[in-house]
Image (cartoon, rainbow, N blue to C red):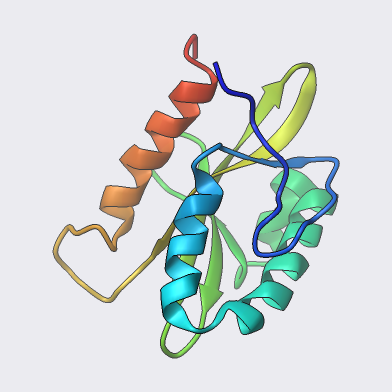
Length: 139
């Protein structure tokens, strides 16, 4: 089994309590490289990572940055709202090797689309849940 990783993209972030699924940063890189908003995103991402690292489950006190996803089995979302990009990062809290982490699972660009598509939480939640199972196959 692969090991969870540190946050390296778009810039390294040294964290005690935030880790990533091995495919997560590829998702994020794919979104940012075609968007042209990597520089703008980086500062906001570091702010949210710092908030998440310091507050863990209490991150949702900052409602414009974080939310607990209803009916999603303990998943949370980190939100980035910008006029042309609406990036979301789905994550969960989990104990790994005796330490509690926020595990960043899946990044996607949410688009205003009432149909189920690759750009909606309806598609993102199953992907995130599958990735969580990859890390913790025994539940």
